[in-house]
Image (cartoon, rainbow, N blue to C red; front, side, top):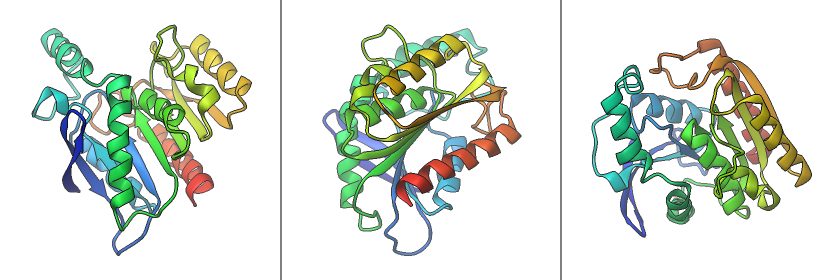
Length: 244
């Protein structure tokens, strides 16, 4: 992984880049991390994604909180104090409004890279990042050709920044992979999201994996290898259809 910093309106955002060997240019994919933050498991996802022929940008969405040590995915949610810090220090700065504002800088960064093929990009995200991936598709429809969400939560709620409210602005192909055991994305929310995307004429597919919320990153206690491989097949299909 290559590291860089991207200047946003609020400071310098650490970011990480993975791409195939050679000069490119390659289609770009913006990878939104999960709520546990930047750590080796996120680098694994970015690196593997790059092997399919994509320039992958992984920004640290927690940069407003300052530098931090990699979090322990096995214990972060079972330790009350760690959960409190995660919510108050980290989740509080990675709001949809903040990240969508930062996206301008991320898109400009990608446009300036000679290894990136000009044109639209794709986004994908996990847990917290899944919601942000869909929000990005509705906030920057002229730039985003495909958006994926894997075990993303709160995708269709009563909140004013719920991603489903942006459905009428989306032009991207949308893929949502939910889990059978996920209180943050239950069946009624899936139906609500499906209804919003269908009413807006958005090309989309929502599927449910026989797994638990957070199954993709390799360091989580609910990591599911077969479901993760299915996720890779689904993501490759979406990207190939949208970016080539």
